[in-house]
Length: 328
Image 1 (cartoon, helix red, strand yellow):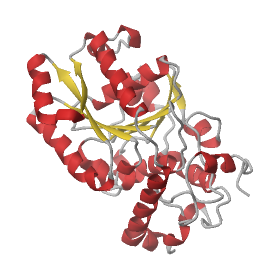
Image 2 (cartoon, one colour):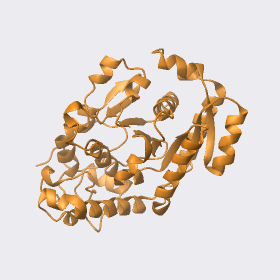
Image 3 (spheres, rainbow, N blue to C red):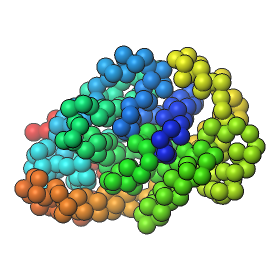
Image 4 (cartoon, helix red, strand yellow):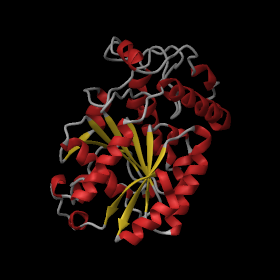
């Protein structure tokens, strides 16, 4: 299942993403963590030093490799150069599992405290004034478009703060989007903004309250959010220790907070897969992007990349695994 964590800046979504990932890994579940935030802090939240986190390979730096591998022998995609972030898979494309050996994972995924992690790469000084951060997270969108996850397998993505994630079709790539919400009107307002954007596309929204000090905070969130509230995470000595650089075993997290992580997992496990809608939305946003900018940039009609007969999911994955290891 594909999971996004979003919320206003400072809500604690990166901390919560790290806790959820570590809880899933401790339970023996296959997990791939992706840091798609403009502020790249997930590696440190998982226990890496600042120096080790800065040295991680980035998806953005390996975009040509990612495109070339994923296009496989798809005859609708002439080259990696005309493949854009929204290009959907079709017959001949290579699809990915959550956990496997492939050239993309070999180049970009590293283990941090037992967690398989890939990072988009930070918004660097050289990008200022000349680049959009969504050009970096385009690698994540391509991966998710081509990734087939099974039951009790998880891809957990720490998204950029605020409503920026709605600036691309990436927000439709998830089975569940968790909005991390502090007990404040401003944070609740971000949740409502997300609901407004997501409603048209059937995006599943759930809420986790964070930085909850007492029952009054919890009651405020219940009153404001209602049935979308999965649970709350209290102010935590475990989290404060991690913020000081002491990453404790996930089993040492307060039991009530562990219960909230497990409630999040249960929401995800109870969500049905809909591969037909998943592919339909990928195609929809690809055509939107093609018309808005990508046709002009590539000099091609990228509508031709859409394979109308392609059905995403496990059967397509099985056919993909019969492809040659490298593109001819």
